[in-house]
Length: 136
Image (cartoon, rainbow, N blue to C red; front, side):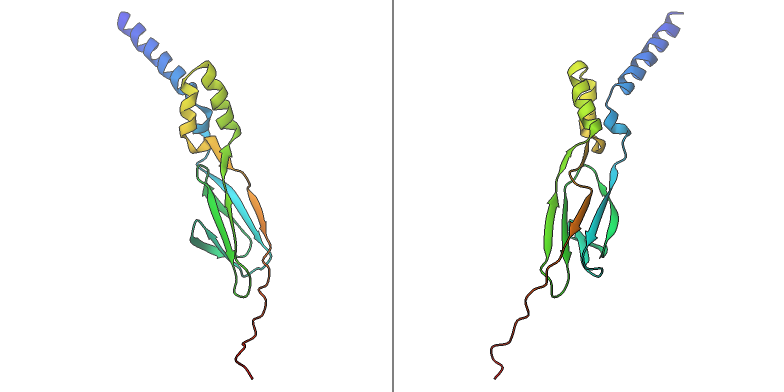
């Protein structure tokens, strides 16, 4: 009989630990991020990798900042860095960590974070036309 009590007590303890270990573990690792460009054939780079052209949505890692570069021949390039911030779940894990220490583990999960912006609009400006000074 003592063995059954020990096993059920252990399983209840384990269930409590898992249930209070942080809501951020339940969130997906990625989030949708949209880049809207003024030029449909502009090249879009995320963290240095060419992702495609024109306006599109991408899935990006929640826990990482995103460097966005938009380029097109004859236009000035635009680069923006989108930082991460605490998500709602990250805030809940922080508050829960004051009551129990275990929810603080949720801050290790990507779900504790989100990008500061999920949609950016990029307007490319034309470069001035350069006239060759050697032409006479």
